[in-house]
Amino acid sequence: MGEVSQKVMEHSYIERPRYFCSFGGALSTLEALPETIPVLHAAGGCAGSIAWGQNGGSGLQVGGYCGGLAVPSSNVGEREVIFGGSDRLIREIRHTLDIMEGRLFVVITSCVTEMIGDDVQAVVQEIQGEHKHPDAELVFARTGGFKGNSYYGYDLVMSAIVSQYVRKPVETKKGRVNVLGIVPYMDSFWRGNLEGVRRTLELLDLEVNTFFTVDDSLESLRDSGSAELTIVVSDLYGIETAKCYQERFGIPYISLSLPIGAVASARLLRETRAALNLEVDVEAIIERENRKFYRYLEPLVDLYFDADLQRYAVVIADVNYAVGVTRFLYDDLGWIPVLTQFTDMLNKEQQTAFAEKLISPTGQKPLTVFDTNASEAGRYLLGLYPKRETDLYVDSLSPAFVVGSSLERDLALKIGAPHLSVSFPVANRAVLNRGYTGFSGGLTLAEDLLSAAVAAR
Image (cartoon, rainbow, N blue to C red):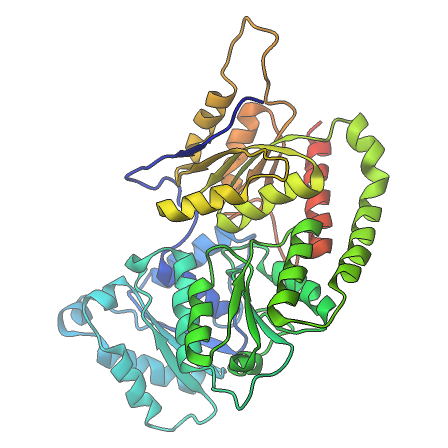
């Protein structure tokens, strides 16, 4: 493989976007919270567009109680754009409180209602003062779609909930931690990934708030201000919410890359132990988990080399998977990533920091590209492996593997490589509770990758 370097490409457009607007991200986040009812102050059609986009990109996950096309909405039209939509929103909130069964009702705003300037805070305060629904809490978040993408919408709505709903604790509870950074539905494997992080942290005898899984409750969210630490398992998503916890409750936070596999999980355990100053033999725990991890991989070793299952990898994904998968391929599976393309919109400082995270312990690194236009990946690969028909003795991207979204299937077919969808949109897999985090999640990812490689032979 030739020399690799960091490249940054800038475009004035986004081709085949891999996220919704911030309003869509906020809605998806609320649909994942237990006993939570989103109330949309938006034009008719917003919820439907998001629902079908989510269905097509989140591993067939859409709908549920008060999700998908069953979301309460003010459905503002031309009249409200001209004269204001506050009255319509008041009626919608009152009807929703009367009809829907929930304990937390969150009003979120769209582009249209942000631009016409409706005072949503005043509306919420008016209804809060009526005291007709003492068992229900009502909060609001300004999530106009033009504010950013769906990952930013996750932080907007979670920060609003932390500020308005999470109660101030009497005291900090020793050993309780909050986990942020895995965005529901935008990470198609969010349920399994949150469970994998929780299982890993529970090795340290911690009480773990993951908020969105079937084992979480709204009460754990309400009491999350008593946590001793916030752990953000992302280099980007969830950090603003963690800062909100820190500002309101004084809870410190740490941020790590998505922990996929043995090496990253060990890092999570070590950094959490250090942050909490735990009196626990973390190295003994890591040694025990590593022994199990590699014992599972051991029977594959002979076939791994004989069948040429080590691959040159192309990774095209959001920040969480771009870093987490690339490092897993280096550190745990022994593959050689040659190209990692980040599909998020990132500033120069973030680009430099993320590129450094991809350097292997031996100093090897993939060509690192920051480009929302994923169709450019073929051009980047051509720069690494130019076509020279008359020269038999040239570097070749073979055997190769493409890890990305379902949009990368065409690229994989073009270069004759197997393909696995892990990053949004995942339109060619059905996902229930599968996850790739933690020690066991790394084994699951290895299994999926090797299965795809063998099936493509």
